[in-house]
Length: 149
Image 1 (spheres, rainbow, N blue to C red):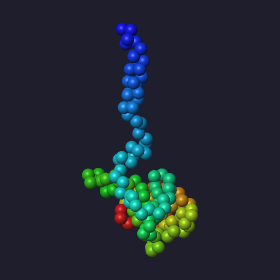
Image 2: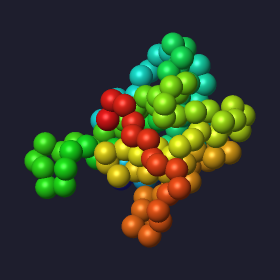
Image 3: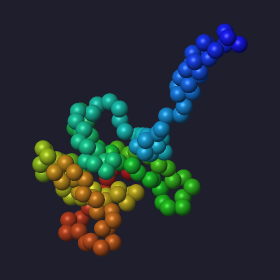
Image 4: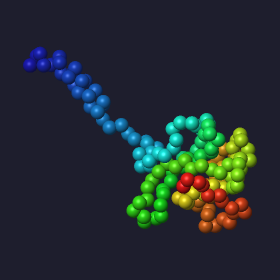
């Protein structure tokens, strides 16, 4: 019994370290949300990213396209083929309807509207959400739909 006593603290410390290493890591809300959505964002060719807040980003591509990256629920409500994706749809910059009014901070007109009902403006490099105001607001400038959505 005397030989077991000195080894006990080492054995206990080793077991505690083992338990700590195998304990599941806490997952953040952003990580959990990212796992729920298939990310269709291009991984190469991005020259500039502008974080608009609220999980929305503008991607300026090296081929001249401007993509609006957002969490998107495709398809109609109740449709079994409905999917959760992170979409990066191209804006129609330079020809009707979208225009870059200011490059830094970025402002784009008119508003952006996706089939998933995301609707808002990009003003001063921020996303101004109109989705919740859609039923009460009549926009003076019509919303422009996204391509590729």
